[in-house]
Image (spheres, rainbow, N blue to C red):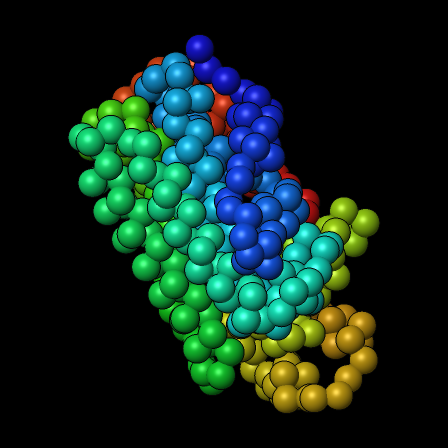
Length: 325
């Protein structure tokens, strides 16, 4: 019987609360429970459970593997926050702020170990291909993060380079989550591949939506500062295309804001957003975003199971597409 996303979310939260990552020294293990308790959409483990539930009716049997994906994701967040010198994560102090940087590095390391530990309760038949999928994806996520850091100081980043970066940093883990769920359900290789493609394309669209919301979201709904990417000169899809298309006075104005080290944040956001509006950057981003969403759903249509079995997965993806925060 198909389970709803809400049921999967409840199962995962119960599983997370029941986890004991270790006890001594407490400074090593408390950060694991802390970051896992900060909540979030639990997007990736839910995708694993949905991918499994397309083919088998006992998704509770892979909760350990689904949780391993979420533990790995939060490990990357813990280390990303250190690299970004981020003070907050989901409105709470980041681990390196709550404890210190060295503790956050070491706790992140043991978190990765715990993720692998959660994968061990997998049948002998599926364990090796599962670890291979997990390892390839983990390396790609690190590649994406490295590209993202390199882009901070790179003068010119192309649209193609940016799309590859977000594919690696964000999208491949969504694809791997679905592929792992399908693997554990012993789905056919071709169906696993279609689900992986669905996840990757939805993931790229998901990040492009993030770029768009950072500039154009309703402030009351967004939950964080609108225009943060503009303030920090983050090389998003919007900025990359604006730099390519701006000419004359708009090009001079945009570069002026990128070069300024002291400025009024509201004024910068308003001015750069105005340039985006003049250049049609919002519409351009929406076209690209919807291109990837459409590609994702085309891949999902090829998965060999009934339409009724795809309902919750489709609804989950559509909710991500329609989100306003």
